[in-house]
Image 1 (cartoon, rainbow, N blue to C red):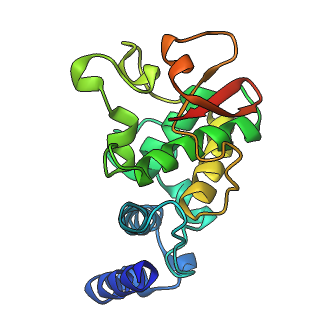
Image 2: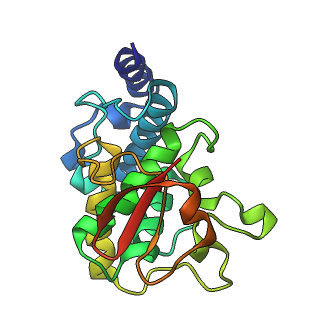
Length: 205
């Protein structure tokens, strides 16, 4: 049902915007970026309504050129799903391996699908900021959020693309929380540990 909804929404978008129906190779960077962001919104909607097992139709899957066209310099405002997810993975795991990056991305996607969390990726990433206690500490640490390692960011964005496309195995076993091995947050004892991936320990209620 949810895949049919996504396919229908994409068809409507293509009728409304001829750019979406064009050969992607002929699109400008701005057009590729807009198309990728529109696909990400459809994927978000599908996951919120259908759960973490939802997978986009092939026409909705985000391409490599599309993901690279969004926020290419890592300096855009965090107001779309791709940028929010990419920046979250970057700041949480930019110094780690791709398995660690994938695990962090999975937590964001798991939260998106879970009751009690915001119904958008940006909402998940920024949750708590309005109270000054962020779910992802980098979001309200008072520092700039722009990327300073473009090569690492390119790796992160490929991880984000696969996460949005449902192409990442969930090595966290459905985790909704995590922390670095070097710290011991008070809340860890209240949850069930699900996995240890690289520098991180993962939990769910």
